[in-house]
Length: 116
Length: 113
Image (cartoon, rainbow over all chains, first blue to last red; front, top):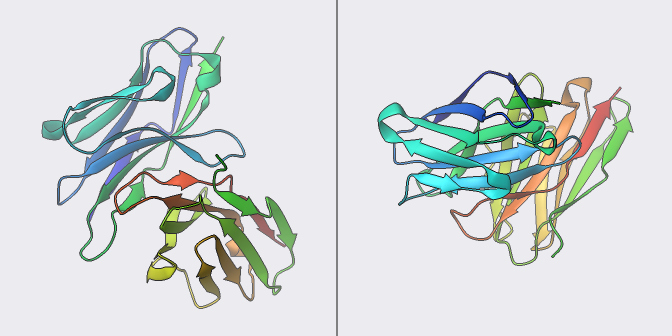
């Protein structure tokens, strides 16, 4: 069974500071990993994804994440936070279920607050 | 390009009533997913379809919940009878292909009184 753990349900950073949102996963097979962002009263939007190949993945809005197999981690970072980054962020893992499409398992989410 | 469209955006109804949530996936997408989001349980996959056929409904909480996809451009999630514990935000998502990222609608916020 696959699972995702996001450390810290709330993270606050100052505008211009580094953003680091942590995600650890477990999967019985090589995983696909995703970060989604959710703004208030909206659905989830894909930030970035890792499937195979390069372990450092760049996404939209200046975010990036690095897949570290040895640490089973996929932490999300952004060098300089902007007020517009305030939102909830979800890490998700998917693996191939027998006879079915890859299904997403979401973490519990991290609410990012950006302080002026 | 139109994204996934869900209706209604908000629904408030009394317990015992039938509730129908609607979803129009992105044109050409062959997978459609229904999720439920609550504070207590986070995001849960309820059911998904491939080419209009339900593939996995193991996440559907109980028989009061049913989902259909009569054609490639429309799906419904029905709750009958509704209960207060069904209050949540329900999301529909679609994807093109088996292992591609899912695109989410803006959700339906359901309140059962």
